[in-house]
Image (cartoon, rainbow, N blue to C red; front, side):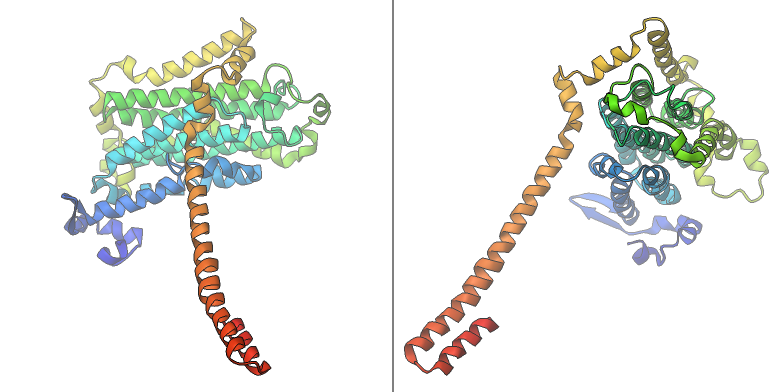
Length: 450
């Protein structure tokens, strides 16, 4: 459609001529008017839902974690799965002139909340991180729907660092435990895997958005941007980020703290010595980036009004936010309201420290509420709100129905009806009318041809 209406699909050309996009024709569907831009953005967003694992087409991402961990770290955390969000960022001029922004906002918010809740009860270490990726992608899509494309790009970059770090740490743990991925059979690994433990802690603190880590700088701007839309959206976004803090603490606690809960025979193979120095070097680099990248990249994606005015060739303004404008939109809100994300993150961290150092029951507390199959809520969460069952049943029944219909047409109509039926009639007619072998063979040849 883009090629048909605008004569090109080159993003750079479309961006330079985006003022002429308002002249695109309007179509009326069921009495509602949709411009060509709305339809283009709608179809693009459907692709983004599948590519960036938004709710409804998200099932492939956790299942893709069955692959090697380095593949998950590179492709499923930093490149392939974020391509949909990157497309939204690059097509910002389309989105700004369309009416699809609110759809993206609600889709991103629901995805973030859904993935965060489901991640609370998952037992596979890689699937916990996978649903965490879904949750963070939902926040990025939400930011794009609000028009803050620069913030989404900022979080996309910082997310690549700490999520790749988490995946590689998970791979180190899984490799050391003989391919064990169930976090219920882990625990007490902080002394056996000290380097992995430190890197894993940094990655979880970064994704939780605690101060002075990269996730804090990018998430802060995302939540601050949601406050400009509505206070309700802001509070729901804060809940989504709070879920991130909770399942990050749970993941680190069950894997690294407490006592080893797996098979006794496997404790003898736990070692970082066999992993080589390359992995440890990569973990060190990603740990530094997870700490410092947010602080150093923040000025690139936010710009002061005076600085913007002084730039002679200020480009890419659609993805850079003028901080003065953002502050002016939120200056009427109380300071305490703006500090809610930080307060929640520090609250859960404080609870973690208290339970660990004073009550001596932190791991047992988390295990009780995350492993006990006592409530219907747990059953719904562990079944991922039955999305897999529903779509799996629908797809399997559809395939069985299509296969049965194909078999009926192929074997029943074509082969037995037209093929065997006509050929058999010729065969019987030939044998009844003529006894010479040549004519009987003629019927056999006709049977083979059919």
